[in-house]
Length: 454
Ligand code: PLP
Image 1: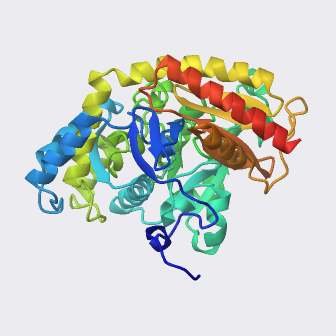
Image 2: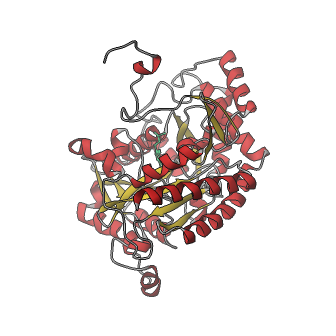
Image 3: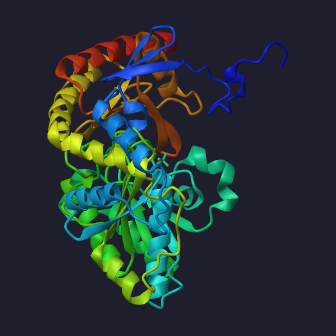
């Protein structure tokens, strides 16, 4: 490469085939680049900027904490902000989950949960219980245990030989059931093949070898907001109890009001043993994530594990991140952000359905609250997917970016090939007029994209 190097030439880009607009600032649901172009942040970045951009209260709380103590090692000390945020999250979580462990990101949170599950069994004299069961069409992060347990085919492929310690069942997907059922037949026969497959796999591998089961309550990036059928998570809970398997619910994307409730698990009336969170906890203002752990697991750790979790990160409970989280959680409550998100989510759902009825290449609209997804199809009437490898969701997002909105394009396996979808998940603070603008831009982008394809 000749010529004079610029700053950007020193960056190890996330994808060297792309160019990256330089963002100078953000305000509310908008981001602005150095060319003066405005983008409506229709996916809150990676579904993290739940509170929108430029929230002064959070910036101030971070600055104040940085001045007080910029780093405190949580192996030796705790801070007031850490204890307060733990209480806030403990109170939001299901009643039997009360102790909060912090990490920097969602992958680390799931890594910690998978390790804690394994330690729980080992402490209680069952060291054989080490296998994690996850699901295809689910994502839990990019670190090794999280990647192993997840089912993101594209991200796993390169590392397959290194991903040994997890097994998988399929995520429920009633419209194209991988078990060959329909929602109607399942309801009629009172069966749930997608949940019962967990029992089959546990028995096949031997319950004495199984440590935990991990799932997203509503599947984000891998299914475009896939909601499980009635009774699914209750059945999963029963199976986990029957075989002493720790149930982990990954709420990294769905937590903090994203689906209209504090945590998505509330829609389904069950309590997991561990709930992981991330992204929205700090509104994206600082790297922060973690897990809330049930009293049962904590009591066991104290009684049988010398009270020590054999794990830890330098930045666990980082005071500035935790201060951001505390300010964010208060902001959610004081500004009734979750309530607004639920209301705008219902409206956006209807607007997307209306859009879908006018565009031949838009399929099912799904999701809850402001975690919505739209299937992208070659032919809506014949329910035909695009051939694999064309990156159609990415291409639609490019068209949207040209018109001033950025979405979260996704692929997940459907009938053995990679299907395309678009996640629509703007900040929960979005107004009705901004929802209308989002839909207007998406409408234009889909028109442009459909014309390019034909
Ligand atoms: N779990 C879920 C459901 C996610 O959506 C993500 C990120 O997209 C992760 C875990 C990983 O979180 P992080 O990227 O913060 O490590």
